[in-house]
View (spheres, rainbow, N blue to C red):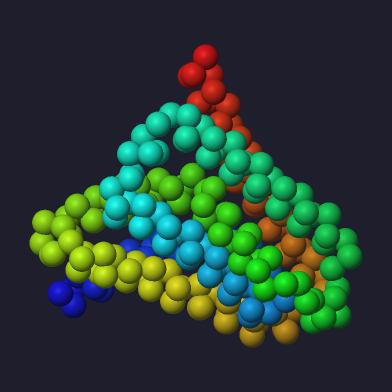
Length: 212
C-alpha cells in the first residue's frame, strides 16, 4: 500500500508542478505580497481540486460529458484568465516594493481567485475527469470503496506539498529582487495568463462552431 500512496503523491505533484494559471498567479502574488497571498492562491486551487475529486468519487463525472457544460467552462475560463492577465499588465505600472510589503487585501480574495482558476480551468478538468477517473476505477478494483477515497486524498497532499514549495521559494527569493524585476514578473505573468485565456477562447469558439 505504501507504493500506492507514493504513486498518488507523485501524481499530485505532477499535476501541480507545471507552470499553469494557478502557478503563475502564485508566483505573481508571492513576489508582491510574500508567502500568505501565494499560499492562499494555492489553497483555493486545492479546494477546487477537492470538489472535482468528490464529484468524480460520487459518480457524477457524467456531467462533463455534456457538450454545453464543456462549452460554458471554456467561455468562463477564458474570460476569467483574460481579466486576471489584463489586471496584471495594468497594475505593473504602479508596482513598487513598498506597496508589496504593505499589501493588506482580505485573505479570502486570493483564496477565491485560486478556487475559481481551478474550477474554470479546462486543463484541470481534463486531468480530474480522465487521469483521476481512471486511477479511481483502478483503485476501486483493489481497495474497498471508502478506502479508495482516503487514498485519493494523497493526490491533494502532493499538490499541497508542491504549492508550499512554490510559496516558500517565492517568499524567500523575492527580497533579492528589484522593483524593476517585480514589474517584469507582473508583465510576464499577465501575458502568460492572457495566453491561456486566448487559448481557452479559441477552444470555446471551435466548440461553438461545432454546435451550429
